[in-house]
Image 1: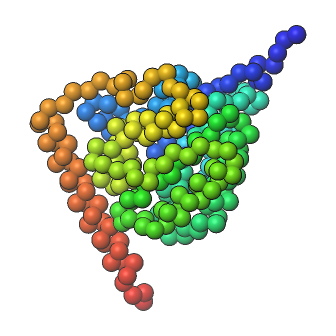
Image 2: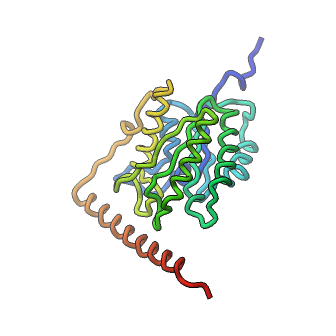
Length: 245
């Protein structure tokens, strides 16, 4: 008897999120900026399906990305090996941040992945997030992510200490090309401890060469953007403190 291919075939990695998961951007020493979730798929030797959208919040995952996946997939009955969800960076930096609402919607998004994926990865956010800094709200965000993941059998990739000049852009939000690879390797370490060992480390798949001049030019660009973001952050703080007419 023929077997329904949708019941015994896994389609690899399915990812939702914001611009960090969407990927794309500047080269870093000739290395393309690709999504950490795509690097995870490459590390596992699996196909990749991404529906992340730049600027997304958790409500957008529920109202836009998941419906888009359901409309576009050619195999609605199929399961995936791994579901990835990295969302909340835009939520926690918004003036209307509300931890209970985020946790509710995050649980719904992770439940969607749980119904379709053998494993699920949820990522926390760096504590040193944004300019101006998101501050203590990031701890609320991360606590909600950990609670939801623990309650649904998901795996957590802890990025609370994620930082460094060559890994995070001057805005302290977006990973560099090397940062995306570093996130992927953290995720692969978590998966390996859960029994899903990678077939290759993403860091071994890139080839780059630098020179003192290129390093100096990169440092100068970073400092310029850092100072620009610092001025913008101070302006925003002064505007927030200014009395309303």
